[in-house]
Figure 1: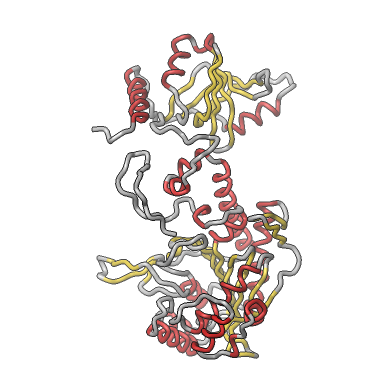
Figure 2: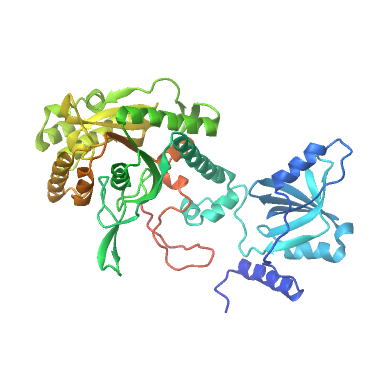
Length: 509
């Protein structure tokens, strides 16, 4: 029984049946491709102008254009490495095959063609093919190659169609892949060990966020999708690994906006016998190395702004930055009511029940962050805002923590890690008080982590870097959904197989 199909899908399905009736499988199991489009073009150009023998290649790809000009058909074939033209002549294919191609082959079909390489009169390197084999009959027409998918919502829901139509979208995800590769190479070169830690956790922690909850049937126990890798990675430092990193999916059950996704990718790395200043140097090297690999230099443009990663990156205390841009010195307002009043007087939009550390965070977000365009480290945060970081020796009300900002976005969050188990216990206890006071983002007490610290953790520096956010900056994208291949979306009512539906899906914005 066939599924419900559109008229176009039924027409194309009938063509697939015609293939089968003639003894040809429109979805064969194997291909005989010998060269990608790029390899075929390179092969021809390398011997062009010499007495080399004629090169015969077999190429395969998706049909993106068909031009019928009398007794000749020009076919544009695209694969994952570029595009090449097929040149089909009626006197070489024969009348029946020539007519069959025009009748049975459509834009979007995956095909294979074999023949010698040559250059046309217009200068196009082409494959002179005497036969074209169907590899996969497309029942959907590809998006308009000139306009792509105009519906932004549909682009996210049908990323596969978006990738077909838009080379720029493919470029974004190629940059993201190169970025991750560059990060791995850099850390591997410094002797870091890549590890894997649990995604399902009996207790969440390592960040101020709300988790997704699930139930483990076999254990009859509540589990959480991790919100951060931090506490497990520091357990590994306790265990004797001196340098570890993980590139991992994390999950936070919170709002969706241009900078936040419930499922996202983080790089976290930790180094024994290091502090937050060591980690600053590591992060500078990591980001510069990635830029050099992707752009071939340290200067690039994103969202209309020129970013320069060379030179010394400024290091500004959080207290000074908030004072400079808002006029509020949070140290002068040690309780929630007074700080809330001062923040509102400065123009901050903050709800009345917001706890003291969250008010400081809002001052940062609303006044400071938009001004940090060139790479800047904000350093030294209030202890109440940083329950996992080590106190400063000369100011125990603040901790050794930094955040890296580029183009107005937070890219990295790092600490000199707290390794005193008793101090850590008291910090967790304060977090529990905030949780009881209504702060849903506060961390619960992790007794097993305290027990790990009691075995002794050497002085350690660590950092978390948002892969999605740095991908946004490097790929010049304004929203996180544009750097996630398949972003989380609200379900649509059941519609046609082409994914279209006239109802309002209520986008999560």
